[in-house]
Amino acid sequence: MPPAQALNPFIQLLKPISPLAWMPLLLYTVKNPTWTAILVVFLASLWPTVANTAFGVSTIRKDYLQVASLLQLSWWQRLIWVVLPAAAPAIVAGLRISFGSALVAMVPAEMLLGELGVGYLTWMEWNNLHIAGILFAILIVGAVGVTLDAGFNRLARCVTYTE
Image (cartoon, rainbow, N blue to C red; front, side):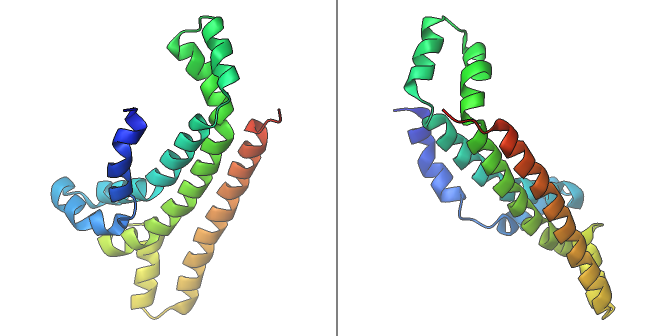
């Protein structure tokens, strides 16, 4: 059984669980709000990248792998010269989706953990009934999202190829 098939049931079990649901357990084990927030954001962004990477690798043309075999490329050479360039568009698409998921998880994680950050700023502004501050924090998150999405879009154009 290939490793992807063996891991698939675990991935399908863990993927639908909200990263925020892990927060109490992470806070209990890590005992550091900053690291807990980082792990929650990591969990939010993990699955789209994993799924798109697996898809990108599974759709590599067999001809490319056969040529790499004929050229007697080592495992690392195949990874660097064949697999990564062929799967790069799907990997970047996964990273782009993961970044959006990370932003969505970051704000509530910061709100709930009561540390610094835009989520914490939003919550403090709400407690002070300062709507303009809340809107400012929301616009900051939106501006960061738009800026980095444009960067991922540019990166996607760089790694996309036509056959």
